[in-house]
Length: 121
Image (cartoon, rainbow, N blue to C red; front, side, top):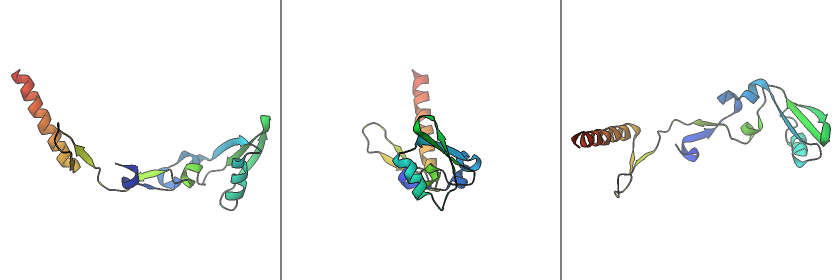
């Protein structure tokens, strides 16, 4: 099932994202572009607590109920209900695209032929 055709991006709550249900934390250099990005781009949509750490780091702690970075980036995926694409390649013949049930039937038929051939020696 190719990602681009058989999956859709969903929100954290749609996939029971543990960062959505439990909250999450990210630690970055205090003077980094990412720290600035969080402060500017998540203002108004997210709540967080900043805690300065040793070594010039800062921890951004996000309480539960907010989209994580994967959710914001559209990286949570869920099958969209399209049937899987199954391709059968036998020897040098042209590959065939099959429905899942037809692929299973074809596989079982080929397996049975193989087993009979082995039994015959």
